[in-house]
Image (cartoon, rainbow, N blue to C red; front, side, top):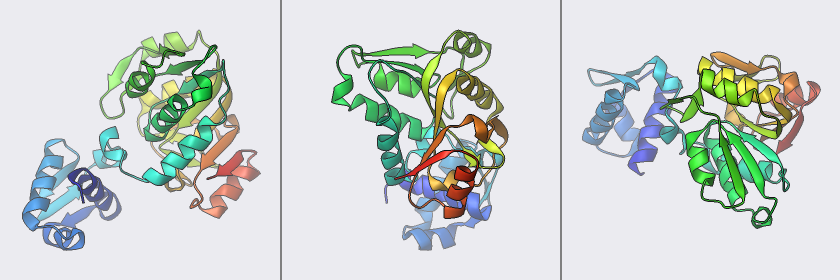
Length: 258
């Protein structure tokens, strides 16, 4: 197991168990205890957990992982979701993308679409620095970045500057990445600033497509982005809870599982 994957696994374990023991985890992952200690020390330095004698306990930040740690989670599912979502895009559209690993995957899928490489191309509106960087070199993609203050965990821009730009724009199709999505309660983000900007992107969009793997469904997070009725469609994976899928369909959301 690569170190990046191991670090992500350790954080996932903490999220589920709230505390872990070095010796137990070393046996589970089939690595040395010294390796686990170094990994835990590294994560503690980034304030993603709290070290204890013989192990570690979770802190609040462990539930809102930096993007670089999220990229190794549910990779096959996110790739399928991203490809399926990107297929909805047609030439000349104004496409909105908020931050997140799945929406970044949508950006990459759009970049691979050869049929979009000719005029009129696309206009992409995003508040995510990594997505803007991903698409900036594409000659037929016009990138509009919202401005604002960057949040290191997600590379998303938020604040009054982002609000000012978005309030002047209209988006044809928004791909909405979420931290949690519940049919009864709506779509959520961990951070209130991101939720506020994402909410405005939803309001400025003609069509909203949520992109979320099954692990995010039937869950809630700290700050609500929007109500379920404001989302037109959901693209998720085939492992999604069937009851969750039926609940979204009952709420009027088109659900596509891939």
